[in-house]
Length: 441
Image 1: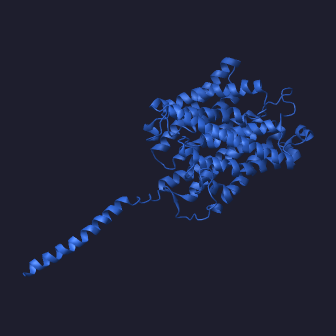
Image 2: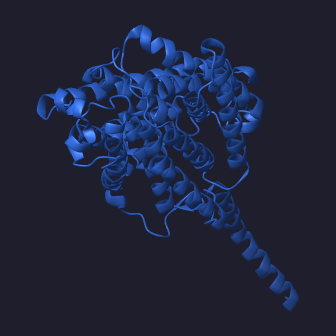
Image 3: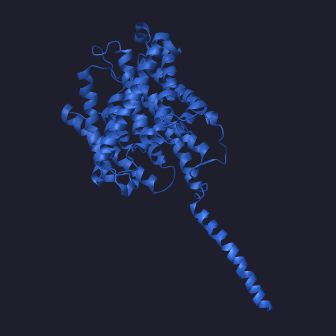
């Protein structure tokens, strides 16, 4: 046999033996999961910025927004609830909240595998960002949601009871809701509920809890007979402005990347908020003869609330319509519905966050389009009317879960340490009686 023939025959035999293995390897490579995306410095920088913006929404944003609307004798109590609440809920989030919300578990709760942020290292990624950054971003959502509630029973709730309540509430209500909507294998996400940045998790959730707290604690002394007007609307306007600016981190940050989705969420947030300011103010102007600064500030918050679940799924024209709808609707809720039903939601948590959140969740099912949100994320105008029913189901689950658990927690606290300050303390003012300070000496 010639040497060249021998070599050719050997090579051919080797190829014959090797080709099946090479084919199997190629097929295995095709079936293997794609590699995780690498760390993105741009996405990480945006998410760090978004976390700071959302934190600003609570301290000082919400703190000043609420402080301007209470009476002067209770200003420091509201500021203290925001400051101490931010600290308390941040600790709870690290210890157990993040794990219950975002660890693997069942459709309703995460397990405790990430308690104390266990198992997360600087190299652990959530998508294209460090998981530590994601945990921080989600922490800012949790802490502002808990403090929003306290606007409902403002002016008459014990500081100890308020902090105990929101601490337990974040563990037993907020974290499960976050898991159901955004967590791995979450119940509402699996059902197809669309909530880009927290219409159910944040606003309906805190809105119904604030209403339940206001109802269970009772009306303020002098409600309906005394002047309970806001003491300093300048503070409220400053607080609303900080909320407006910070909300870009809230909504555009929920894209979890510095890309097109963040840009869509940002412009939709601005458009809906601007439309709601105009719509609320015009409605008030027509019905009361004068547009008020408090109305414009409240309209801004209502617009921010309504677009939160939809900001990554709708077009700017859809956002515009949502803002125009929610402004008059929330104005009616706080000006007429509250007085008609006789409940004392002191700072209109239900009228703005609850009502605005429900409207936003349902209208997401109307205006969502696949061209913005992606495949499978469409609503009525994009040929999927069934999404409205899915959104209503999400609203009902949130109302029932948050309302029921909030009522149980408030009942237990009332029977142990008590919910409400004494009438004498309420008349004197919470600032000095509970904290030993006054806004002016």
